[in-house]
Image 1: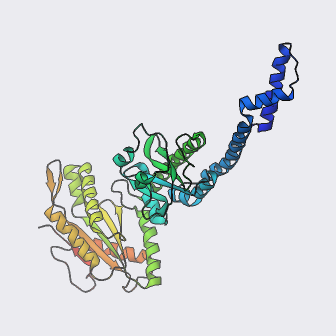
Image 2: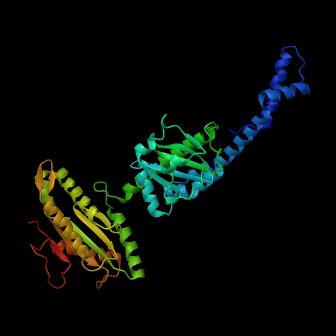
Image 3: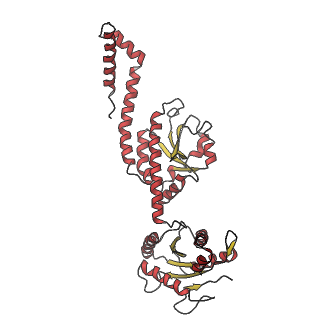
Length: 395
């Protein structure tokens, strides 16, 4: 329902006042002295001013909230909505401080990889964050002396802040950090200020981040394998196509490595599928710990892993596969006291080879060599045409 204008409210008050006087048998019309007295006693001037502020806020807030309905990621919020929030509250600085390890931390980290938004985000430990809230996680309003709150500021910031508001931020009832408002005027955010507007808005922001969290989880599950957390087959092909085109444009190398576990079906039959699943998870963790940040790892199917090495030429994939096998040799898989020494097959293909004209052919070549490697024994084959096909057995 649309808010009633301030002048209508005053008119309604006067009419009700006159009606009461009429019922009491008094003159029903106000004289000038009475009106001035009522205005003074009820501080109508300030009431009108505040009412207009509320009306302007609700009008502008509706526009921001409408934009928030179309936001589904943290980077969209930071690049699209955050500037409007600055205008809404007339604050030159607005940013997020996110608790490390919270539900918001992981999705924000992924957003920062996609966009240059680190100037709008700071990360802080949970204990350090909570140490600033001595009386529970209520909003904090600080004026004049903001230096103790530097841990809330993004790294390498150039803020000149003399007052700030720290508003706790929640996702599904879990404290995940704060949205912070900063101003160079020392009394813009003070402990005695009316915080009802900003607190009301923070409820909308928390609701938005709950929606973003759900969307990010669904997006993650759509592109990642639920067992290992690696990319799934669909996402692998998208990444391979992207990197294949980039490699052609830049003239840089690109290699694909396929690996699988030797005797995986027998492992499942002997110890059960839960044991096999944990062996796959164990191998995936080792792979992730050894690849470069720019490398891409996926679970292709079952016990098969596919790795993309942007810019890679020569023996880099071979070295990685050998390192994984060395680790498996030295650290046998141990699940509830059942130890099993895992060994690998693998096949490799490179964009520099003949007859590889697209990403699909690159993947198929590496996979074909993986299957061929299952027929080889003991030492790597150095026969012509099979130089990138290997079988590694644990000693």
